Image (cartoon, rainbow, N blue to C red; front, side, top):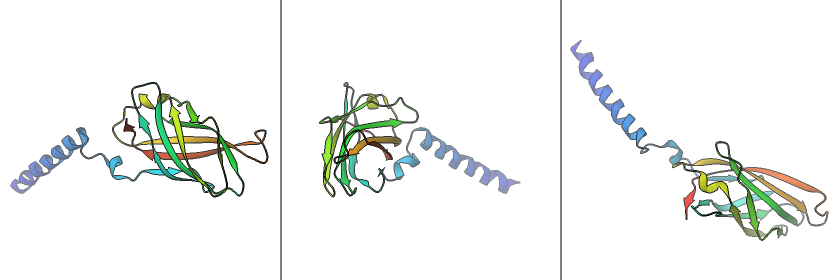
Length: 154
């Protein structure tokens, strides 16, 4: 019985220390996972940063490469998270033409990213509207992707 009491207190102490570390966010498992950006195999996401600030817009950047066989025109990007309202994002400039095989930096101005207050990483859903330059805007398509990252303060 004395054996159980001695090791029981030791186990309770270890569980208490782990509980305190979890409560104060020292052992946040989401911080250990790598950042990830997946936009499909035709439009690859090479580099990205999502920023939030207290002003009206949160300016973020995506570095993408066009792997489509033709030139495409990006017309709209929307970034949203499941716990937060859909973020209305504007491209800067309003539309971006991307030749086949070329890489470009897309600047995105999002309205509601500033409302996200999580300390860890967040899983964002991304939708990109585009059309092929030769076909014109009548034949528009939507690409769905995901970004898993921590918002940086700017």
